[in-house]
Amino acid sequence: MALCVGTRRQGLVFAQSTVMALPGGGCGRYMTNRTQGDTMNKLEIIDHIAKSADISKAAAGRSLDAAVTAIKTAMKKGSMVTLVGFGTFYVGRRAARTGRNPQTGMEIKIKAARVPKFRPGKALKDAVN
Image 1 (cartoon, rainbow, N blue to C red):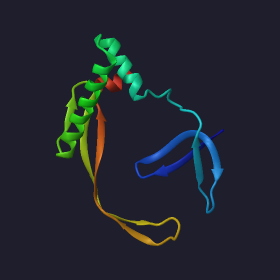
Image 2: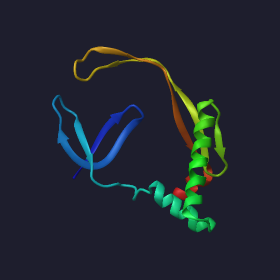
Image 3: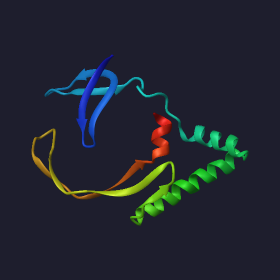
Image 4: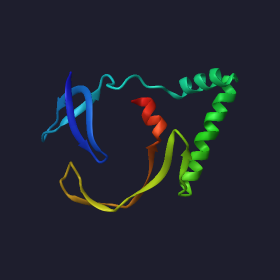
């Protein structure tokens, strides 16, 4: 295991990973474990909702799907979705830019894009820290 530090478009990447050398330098990453804890998948969230709300897993699944669909629909329209105490989902804009094809080294044009973003609320930040 080694600590591999690289860059991505969003910023720095710090991950405990197995490092492999790539042609032309850099490091490839194969994630072997997480540094901040385990992940929680959709089924585990549904189980938690079902137990907390004392409803069936099927109803909890439909509720989660409905919430996610509502957030997606609002964001498609360009709206912000604020869940007080949790955070805000919003649509950001990424400007058009010039990039480089890593295989050929030729410049390419990357068009502007709308990207989904999330800003955590104070209560969520406090709960995590």
